[in-house]
Image (cartoon, rainbow, N blue to C red; front, side, top):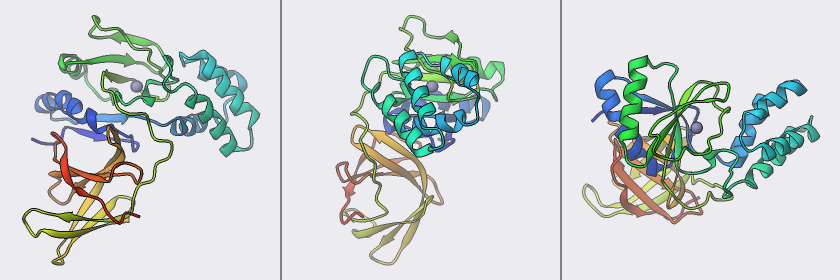
Length: 293
Ligand SMILES: [Zn+2]
């Protein structure tokens, strides 16, 4: 089975959504020979503030009001705008103040964006032909617990599918292109306060081939190497950061075959390495991460 999706803009995809993405993407790929293009996953309040700050910079007062009008949580939108205006000339302070406003909406019934939750992702659709859009919607709403919102650039929800389901309170505007917002019922723990990914660790591999200690080193932002005790080395490419029921982590994919995924947890999560084949099925235990730094 070939991969059926790509992830843009370093979007963070919760690993518990990957089977859902595959269930939607596999028939799409089989029919059109195209990958789903995932443009957005889960975001921290800080990341939300950084992206919005970049979009707001240079806008006039009236354009800033229009920009904020797209958000359904009006109170938080106005508070974020005030935070922006009161910290002009000091980007870090403005971003932190906005992030604080957004953080205050996490876990409430009215989060500033559904993307603070672990249960949604966006699929680019401005490159899809009409029949491709139709097929995508048909496949997506056939997956249990999934509904799709069609988002347009001006902030209208143009169409909702699976109308028997309640339509979630979707916030639009961050993604400039029309896209499908795919909402699921996945649940996981709250986002951690800080994220600290390792750059080096060891673990003991118990199976064949070559049981023994294996040393992992991040050699650059996109590459890890695994060194076996017999001298053999294999490379892994960074696929995406992720957030799942075990905590935050990074998913890497073995090179050159790209058929094996390893989930490296962040330093505050339980130190369990997880492994799955690609396309992902269920994650299983690979080993305990030790001497992580
Ligand atoms: Zn969305």
